[in-house]
Image 1: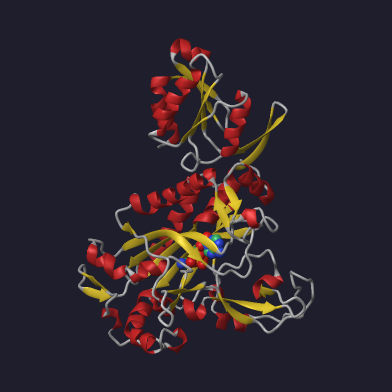
Image 2: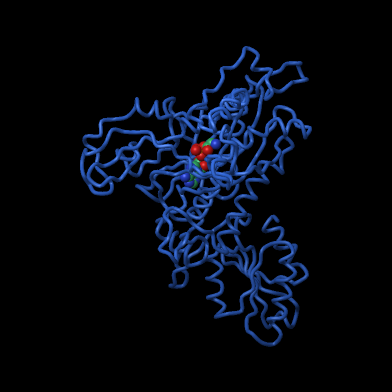
Length: 488
Ligand code: GAP
């Protein structure tokens, strides 16, 4: 079992080996923004692909979608984000630093949701003994105030004709806004899901711990539509599916758990919510949210029906969302444009929604942390990433033992052949032991060496990363051998 490592070790390995870099580093960096390097992008792509495979491709009841990041501003009015997607903050009177009120009490504690500011105001505590994390002043804060986390932007070039809108803070709303389109253009029937992976943006007050909480991040979200009354059963189904996904990709069971939300912690749209938490190596080795699974009821579709009925107010106000009051529902809301006709029992209703919402960057960090290991081999330290083969950025590295006697040509040919099936890398530089170490640190499950014996009998050495076990395999059996081991 890999040891629980320090975050600093991961950050340093990520930079050294080209997994993750600070954004705009040549200009001193941009806080909380990160770039994925050559190995990192392969790893993150594999995380995405594994999610997509399990959530969409392996099921007959889920379809995919890829929506634009910019959406009509009324989407955010109807969803509640324009009015309620806020953190409660207080400003230090000494140094003017703004902090999340919930982070003042316990700095390392993860606050899992952005809560309704009205609710938060009710919960706000006396700040008289709270310490400013920036200057250390005690109890010298302004009254707590709500700070909306959405990034504003404006669209259009003509002065006077510009429209204020937002970068999406979650991908989910693109799915709700397309619910009717998907129903009308495919053969799906409730129960079914719509999945999406894409970037979201939040102007987080406190960013934290490398790629754990950033202002630009990627989400993998599923909105699963079901008949009211069956929602609790689907909630349990998705809880289990999502938990099992992490385990199947090698996450250590001892570092994964569920945590139910308390009623006062629930987001404005949720009837129930559970987090899948991972024991990350920051704070005191704290349990932190990896993914949330929520029962969103019929809240969003109903809100969008109200939004559609209110659109003229937005035009009349010149695009000022604060002037818009969503029209109340009529008694027949369950027959509205975002309802579903169920031909099983000839009923019409607005489906309930179960939403597993994962962070791609946060999962990538968990997979990195979980795979990281150090061990001593013959008196030398070996760093390795014990990635599940499906996640490993490079599946096989191919080496000629020496750069002569035709070995580089044979190794190159093997690499070219295998590359048709999975990511490979060719390396002829340095002593063979060092080449193995480089690949161990990149998490490559197999190394293949062409040596003197290859010239005689056509076999190569295959060495496995974790056990360092070696086999002689004939070249014509190599692809089959690796595909079986890698399950690709
Ligand atoms: N649509 C529901 C939703 O967005 P959330 O709990 O706010 O729910 C879901 O976010 C997941 O997105 C989180 O569990 C986390 O993995 C990821 N996430 C949220 N904010 C993030 C941030 N600032 N940086 C990185 N990942 C974030």
